[in-house]
Image 1: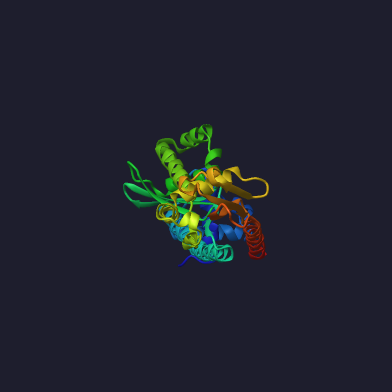
Image 2 (image 1 turned 90 degrees about the vertical axis):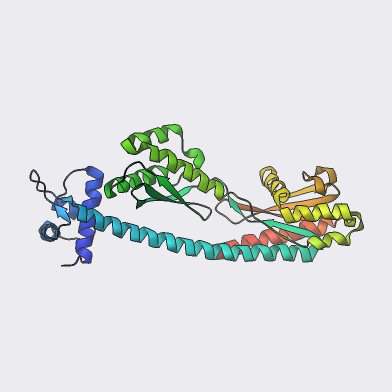
Amino acid sequence: MELDERKTKILQAVIRNYLETGEPVGSRTISKYTDLNLSSATIRNEMSDLEEMGYILQPHTSAGRIPSDKGYRFYVDAMMSEKEREVVEMKEMLLERQDKMETLLKQVAKVVAQNTQYAAMVSKPLTHGNKVKFIQLSRVDAGQILAVIVVEGNVIKNKILSVTETLDDETLLKLNILFNTHLNGLSIGEINLGMISAMKQQAGAHSDIVGEVIDAVGEAIKEGEDLEIYTSGTNNIFRYPELADNSRASELITAFEEKNLLSELLQENMEEQQNTGIQVYIGEETPVQSMKDCSVVTATYELGGGMKGTIGIVGPKRMDYDKVVGTLRTIQSQLDELYKKEEH
């Protein structure tokens, strides 16, 4: 006899209820617990079948049932399969979105450079205060478990954790419930010592895993904050004699190629942005040493959900500021409109 959809739902309800309460589960509880709209008598018959098939057991002291090892195995395999499918779908969706985003921002940098005839840079948007969306622990082998952590900002982090003893299916399930109950929807700043202490207490003998998972969450969120920058029009620097001598041009081009200095500039801009979202650095005001003979104009753009990035234009001090600011404002509004269209 195979498990049909009805038996599967009843088995899952028995296991979930038992995991939550630790008490044997009766047919009346299941009739309230599921959306099957079945009578207690029908559920009793189905539970008898499940017992015959070895998925649940009836303790001598109770009329209720508890899961057998076979039942736990079915539940875990089904849950893992579903979660793996969700993670694969999420990865595919995020990769597609990231590819579109990368193409768009490269095009923005190119258009800005062409329109202004200066050098342009665009940073990929970051989601500040990333929050945990989902945590899944699964067994790799006797001494290792895999933690899959999904956080906002389209980041999925996999981390192998070492364990001193093999964790059985019920323990893994309880740890998954523990982590997702406490951490989902929180940023790393909202995870405090009191919460970690309570989780360690609930994890009991496996309290060391709590600290490792928290560390992995921190790494995942930090990974999501790495700044990626797209540049275009670097050769436009040679159009302006005051920037075109060998040493100055070389320093500027190196800054554009290595991008770490641009990263500092754009990060600073996002932290110190004014209400207009437009920032103008002239000569010595520019925080990047190799750009002290230039003017840099930056604009912050938003794509909703706390996602912010920066567009920057680098040119001579005698740049056409009206045109540059106008171009940046146009791009800001176009990105905003594009995001609203995608949302609807």
